[in-house]
Length: 93
Image (tube, rainbow, N blue to C red; front, side):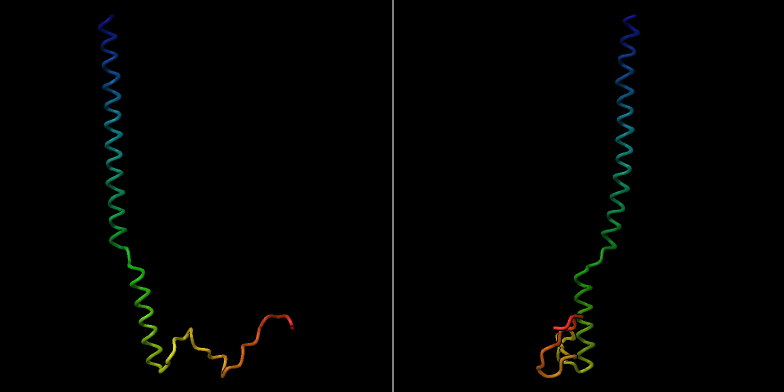
């Protein structure tokens, strides 16, 4: 009877160890997969600031080629002279 108890006690930790080993192996596979996805995402990552700078330079070149001396956002094309701009709200003052 003592041999049976000892045998059962030894089988239980062995089963737990095997289950833990399988769990660790599954976690390692998943970790490897996620690291691969992360590396692919980093490789495809684009330098956003470089794109913004490129766009600004291209726009600057474009408006300079047209002969403009001010950036379009600084030009007051609708306000000739020094007249104050009218309010365009729907209410009369």
